[in-house]
Length: 392
Image (cartoon, rainbow, N blue to C red; front, side, top):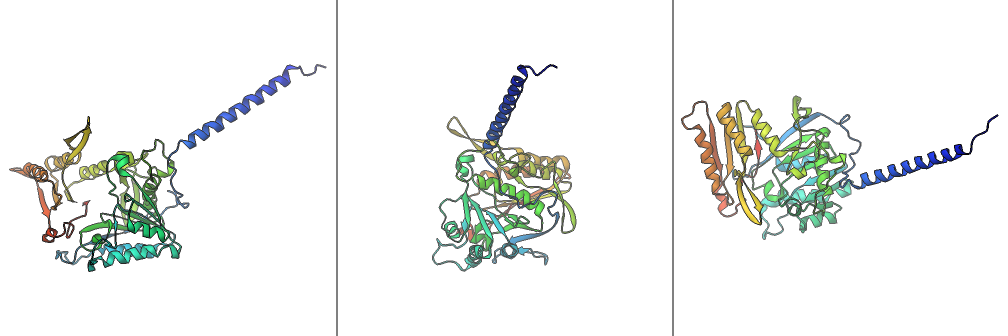
């Protein structure tokens, strides 16, 4: 009978040591991977692509100043203030708001204008969320806001995004997410003028947790940028896009089949699969068959770059070119409504003239441009301002 050799226990011991070493290396690797994830994202309350709601109800929410007499053919949009209050009525657990401006109370004005009442009422309702057990989270670019401090004193969580340090730009996003299933997206800031004195337009979408979940990921991305002066190199899956240009969300809007996705800008704010705003806008224009109606505050296809410590202005052709192609090559009718206000750049008229010249002595070519202004802007440049931005 032959017994075990003295080498067999040694080989077994070596295998155990090798296995243990591999496990330790794997553990260290996992720690390094997870520690490199700069942005984790918020909890999504168990909502997934598989169990979210796609049967949605959408309503246009608009503010038209009282002094305007606009012909509406008897059709009326939901007043913007009513839309915000309806979302707060729906809130059971959470309200998330992104707005660069917070001036609902008009505290800096004396006397306080009567038109500020809607803003004051909305502010008080936001203050009353905590006693109802509703969490209020706010993202803004303002770091020293009296209103945000007052909301914090009433239980709100507030974080600021330093856009100047991150992108040398500004925060222009404006949206609400309520209970991860109702949303508002539009032009209005949290400013009393947006509820009374400025033309604003947005959409309120109810019972649409699929779209709300994707918008929540944008909010979560902003939320994690609090007090950062650098962009992360690795993102968590919880801030990557669920839907995009090549994979839109198929849903029902007011019982009508539709497709939608959330885009973002600038490029640095577009994690994996998030479509850039410029690509989304270009896609809409390029898919137009008969008409494109556009309302914007400014039409100025120029961009300023810093080159060797010198500011250089260049022509930014991306959107301007696809509009020209739609008009000239496909015969699409284009209407442009541009705000005329104190900050309108003189070169705007040069670009508009260039666009209009495309259809001179051309058949099957239609491009009209109008400027929207209000005489009350002489006293207050925001009074009657056409602040909305949209495309049909």
